[in-house]
Length: 262
Image: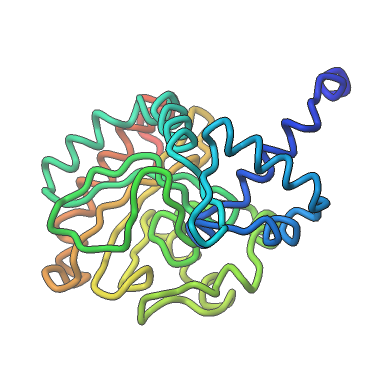
């Protein structure tokens, strides 16, 4: 690590930090916003933003704010597609999507959010603008609850903050750490998680874990449906076993031992 530090390019690191400030909740920012978020001097940020804009990574909107340009999205998509996990999981995920005729997603934990790596969408599913690269608060999402459930207690304590519960859009969104802990304990006992109109009104989903060779939960897969057509009982009856089978198959392809309990 010490040897790597001498090769660090500080200007590049600052530029990457600026790009990391943009998110679903902050799709466009002013330079003054970036000053507040990063703590960098205004003069430095003007130079960084100007460079990112000239290289095609940022674009300026008519109101003066900046947002990531298509070049950033292209890089991100190429990186996601190149992940071994995505390549390994795509076949089983497509089979699950074809078998259920519903939306199927693969996600991993990124901070206190779920990052969508694969999304095979049923055109009839009406949700927020979720796509590959989107992030949702983990405490509300079925995949998020799976990924949180298998963290160590100290990891969970370090990860979750009061703000982690601030963006629940659905009527049943969990609002406290105590309620979440109860749900996570249930996920560990059952081996799957439910999301019942927590992410958004009218959306239900069921998720299960994907494990690596060492048995660690590294990702989650879910099946998402419209609540109007599926109550929780029907969701479980029709999709729990196909989902669990798919997660086992992906885990096996990643080297998880045969016969292990998911």
